[in-house]
Image 1 (cartoon, one colour):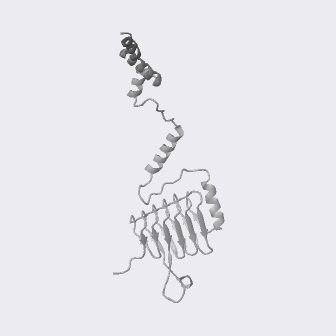
Image 2 (tube, helix red, strand yellow):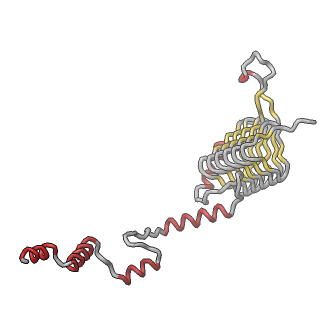
Image 3 (tube, rainbow, N blue to C red):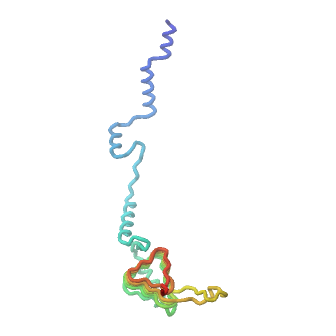
Length: 242
């Protein structure tokens, strides 16, 4: 009989073991306020997660970006102007001084940073009212006249090189990285290096409202009809007679 009592004391009461286990669980995982947990679940938040900090600057930047994109055409020919700054007139003045009277400006012209215009003696560049020169674009006129029509837009890092003449009509859009060149090499003499052979030159003309996609190329003699679209990465050469 004494042995049975000792064995029962060693085993203990099962209810006491369950109570001890619950106490251990409570020690390992403290419980929070049920009302607070219910409120957190209603707001879609779990315990242990932190809310992301609110940044007014991020909201302002998003509003500015949406305003710029929504006010411009969407596609490969889209030209999204940079925000206006106080240095536009200074950049235009610097370009006019560097051209030494060979750059003609008619009206108000937007000039973004890093724009370069080189005009050789005997050549001329004309910028019509309301045109835009995108950031980093280049205009090089060795001969002839380069005219950028009223309201036309040259995308960032686009390139225009003229030996005969380039005419960009009013309201045209030239996409980023597009190239317009009115000359190309010839290959008539197979015994001479290409760089020593004469260039073929012919004026390039873009009708009013024409659109040239990003990375497109227009070569000597190319013509784009008013409102026509030149696709991105397309190369436009003069159409041969049938």
